[in-house]
Image 1 (tube, rainbow, N blue to C red):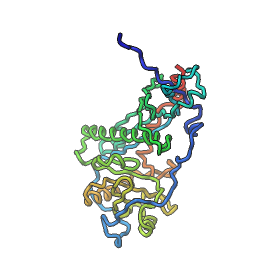
Image 2 (cartoon, rainbow, N blue to C red; image 1 turned 60 degrees about the vertical axis):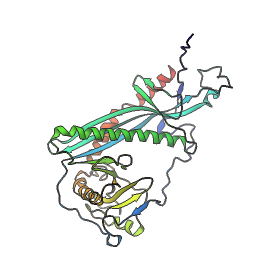
Image 3 (cartoon, rainbow, N blue to C red; image 1 turned 90 degrees about the vertical axis):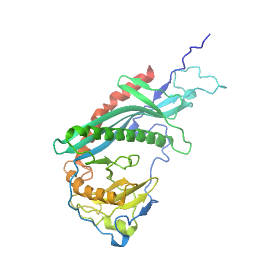
Length: 353
């Protein structure tokens, strides 16, 4: 007779703590990324020799046919605990439906999260408009028995990542979530360029600006990573000090830098009111494998294009670095994530079912 028994359904429990404050039982050790000295490999003399480094003023040139701004948002709705099957030599707890210390010891923490990515297009015929949005819900875990979690508010698709005993579990799961968000950003960027065909934009004339580092997206052509905040001094001290003397619209020469990945980079000061030495300064990145001349051309293009999109201080506390199209895109993406309280309630209902 054929055995048609179904595997036991995945049982999980929702952590009662608001995920904003972390888990009620997690160890926070290792979660803080302390600011330290940079270990990046830096080659300053890409555009000009180090001895001739000085602020570079914007140059005149053609504007791109369209500027595409790509961003993504993420939100952890709840931390859950997925019960693990007991070892073969140990019987299951008597009260399997009760969250007792016996099954709690065999539970693995996981994240239930919503994330979304989108593209705002700025082109002559249409102005600034939302071009592409995609949203997802996901369950991120190392539990091998994890399956999709259907809820009244949507299904959380299971993403099982390999466990790493050397890595803090919360950091590991957060990285898995960030990886999925990055993949979604690549998807909307690629689809947005396809959608440009109906906008009268000449092929290959657009510029793609990704909010955040370009890591994982360096294969996208004509793409820039836009970094708003600075935690590390990558340049040698004398060149790093020069950044504070940039005038609005000026940039540093292009340099090559490498950490766990390589890229061309340069600093640019956006128009802003006078303030601290690094007020209005952003770092731009492009792929390391583009020719030197193309990297310099992208740096010059960033000077001509990005200052016009700088945020206003009276409208945005992150101005001018938080570009106006990106700020609007973030608001729309967060709206499309849904109500966090309702989503958490839906997860609790699913856990009790």
